[in-house]
Image 1 (cartoon, rainbow, N blue to C red):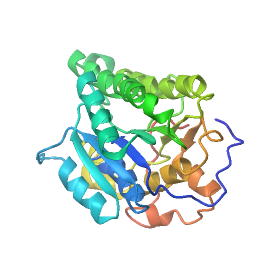
Image 2 (image 1 turned 90 degrees about the vertical axis):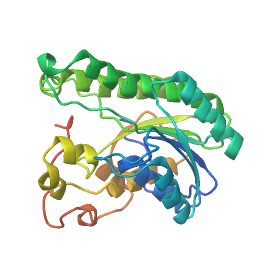
Image 3 (image 1 turned 180 degrees about the horizontal axis):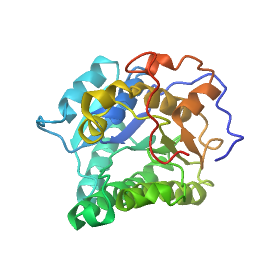
Image 4 (image 1 turned 180 degrees about the vertical axis):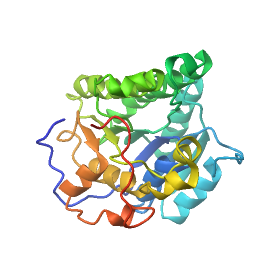
Length: 284
């Protein structure tokens, strides 16, 4: 991590910026979209959910309504990040509608916390296609337009590269897929530094109240010990409003970003104020 990065200057604005956010129909992706919308940003909602899901709330269209109600402009585009054709078509639509792309948020992710013998290859392939390949593909598709932007950022929701066997042993396939996203950050930050494109990662200190936590980690009891997605959205806003040539190659942690920006009250992000939130994965 680049510890010289300045996060203390007052937050700027994302007004007029165009954000291409994968998986923005719900959860952290939608929270980042809504925070940007309050500034008056344009948001491309690149996600698969066009129709209501029995276990997952929200669609690209309901997310678009919320974004516009918050003050932004929304473009919902049905997108499967595993499909090169669909990703490139979605980026083209974004450029046609808003004139370019200023920010890419690689948020879409698939998860299966299963051991090697319990992970079907179909699930292995899904995680690697969505997480690693999807991050690489979306970055590749957006980069020609990011290189033309005034303050371009790629922000990928992936963890620091922690090579402890502890973080592989219980769910090797998932860890490999998430670390693939982080390796995209590491490599692209160096590759595009001279072009002024900031490439960073952001990861939560604690579990975040999302459908994945509810469905995989213990239902409402687990949710009660989470922080809300807004902590990730506020941390992302701090990063994305910084000069791209000064903030790149970092593996940021949400509450560290906000603490360095002057935030002292983290209880406001708690689902249950006063309850210590559960720690997330990959952080010792």
